[in-house]
Figure 1 (tube, one colour):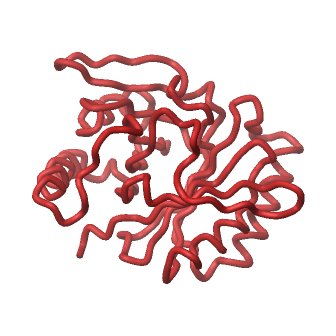
Figure 2 (cartoon, rainbow, N blue to C red; figure 1 turned 60 degrees about the vertical axis):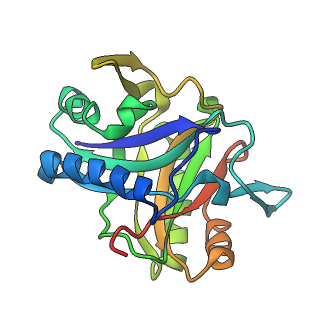
Amino acid sequence: MHYLATLAGPAEASTAEPGSPEFDAEIQRYADFEQQAGAAIAGGAALYPVETALTVRHGAGQALITDGPFAEQAEVVGGFYVLDCKDLDEAIQLARLIPAATDGPIELRPMVMYSPHEVPGADWWMALLWDQPDAVIAPETPEWDAAVAEHRQFGDEHGAVIRGGGAVLPPSTATTVRVRDGEVLISDGPFPEFAEVVDGFYLFTAPDRTAAAEIAARIPCGEKGHVEVRQVVDLGA
């Protein structure tokens, strides 16, 4: 079973810039975790600071693209892992070892679809699909089948640049993991600080911010949801 581990933190928290000594030290912490987790890590990426984000919403038959993250979000996503575990207990045991668990929450969600990806490069971008909790579509429903058909069409049109992606089960299946003073704190449900919930994601390549926005604007999105576009950090640079 694949689990999406979404790493979050306060929107106002300072983030080390890629290339700085602080960033390099943080990356080493994650490298140590990844060595310990081994083959259980099926994917993942670090994202540039949320100030660099683009937000795409759809209304009146057109896409509205604005700079910055969703203004109503109290906490923001800094990166993600896809964990390949036999069950939720095993996923929790791994999630508690992720360095971000000591600073913010980590949300675990079972994935209903996952397209594996290679090691991200400098021209990679992530599109986080957000939606209102009450608007999330459950699998094995006519609405789900219709949404899958829309995403399949997007994939047919932009398959040359898509590098991976996935969809998660409804937020009722979420588990939030935190580590405070060495104690593992587990709660059912998604981040209570989030006004919306993650519904899925795409990884794709684009030469620049403008091209990334144009691709993201074509991603199917519910009337109440939005797409957050973030550049992926090239850790091989």
